[in-house]
Image 1 (cartoon, rainbow, N blue to C red):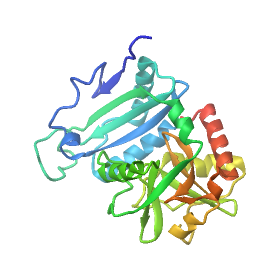
Image 2 (cartoon, rainbow, N blue to C red):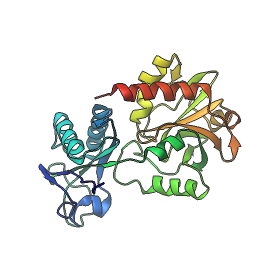
Image 3 (cartoon, helix red, strand yellow):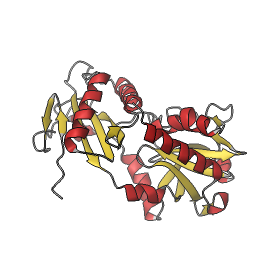
Image 4 (spheres, helix red, strand yellow):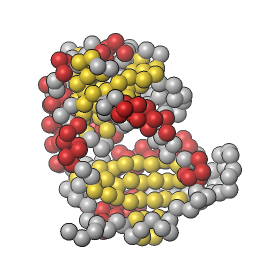
Length: 292
């Protein structure tokens, strides 16, 4: 099999290597100053691209980065990248940086810089995804990340360090607890199941507005006949999670991930629960049907 070629979009041009793209004075390199989206490719087509571009535009608005690429342009760009790269199962990453500048330790005016837009795709390891979908272990960590965690920015160092702590203990992810309340995991959103009902924290500044989380609540759960609640009068407490019948994570890469234990304590007897299995099945159906 020949070497896989990678089609790369960068500022209105297409390339086949990264050597002429990002410069050292890009604020993404200087400060992690930008936003991104990671979109799953399934059967040669992007899944939920419109949801991801909506979130990208929200991140850009909150960061004060002016849009230079329209949503329908992203659709065309992603289609070309996927087709040219011959990706059947993989991902596309969209990166928008504030632009190139000197070491200016402040946020420039919205119109001061020309944003840089990078789009590329790569294949994914389906065996790794299948493995985690059979169940994972997690740890908990205090959520001391501060505000603006709802922005999917290029600066994800705190989340990556938290996940590295989990991986040191042979765990998949770290679940953040802030003042005794569940927020999210370092790489995922978190859902718990009590009395057959899915509960998950309401969206706020302490968590990413996960695309997969949204699709579970609005598409997979209703089609599976499962009640879900994300705007409860009471937030989800640490104790609620630890005494839940089931816990599962959601993210765009691995889909629906059952949690078998947290901090060494078994969840649901250490087995994948019935509700989680239903959500996995109906989310898989949704992926097969496709979603623009």
